[in-house]
Length: 228
Image (tube, rainbow, N blue to C red; front, side, top):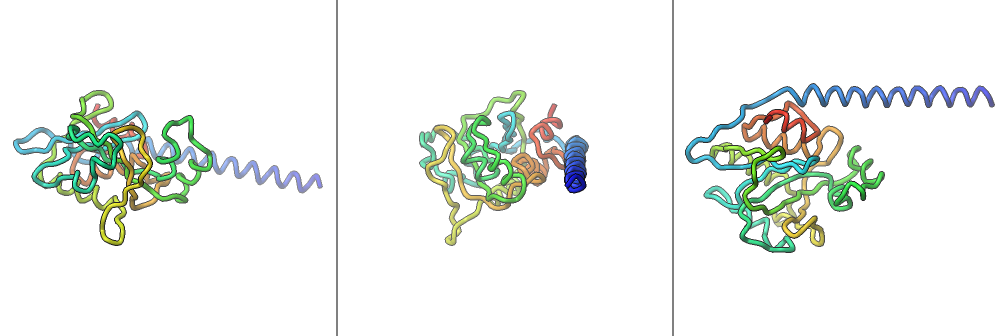
């Protein structure tokens, strides 16, 4: 019996050390890859589209005009899908993330262990979170971008392809869920995990549209590091 207990203790010790090693590698990888820049910071040119990177301190959204000559987002992301249906708001923010986390955790105080585990280990589906805004104000958690038509075209395609459409090709509104009066949720493609987070999605959006970004990052700080 004593030998069996020793074996269990030994296995537990090795398992704990292994987990600590994985956490350390993930942390170091995050730090190193987050500070490696790709792309260049845009400067204003005639005809550019003004867009924004907006963070709430944890989660990053990409904010663009509701409509311009390339796309009218309100044709698919309807104002009426939000509680306020406020058509005076002429910017729209897009964020991607774990569906369970989004819908079940409006605040950190409501985070459940089950939700966190499912999100980290490829066990849940994803959702797009959209929010209508007045023009954002540049500050510590908001950066302005200048996109050419070609760059914005690539960003449009990336955002559109992040939604999971129904059999008729229409995006799927997740009714009955919002954080406030100006936002809505929709079904999305891909699966959230430790290596592809909400901020990884935003970072990928920046890279695809030719903007300055991290080589890879799971955190909003990795994105904003390059805009200090």
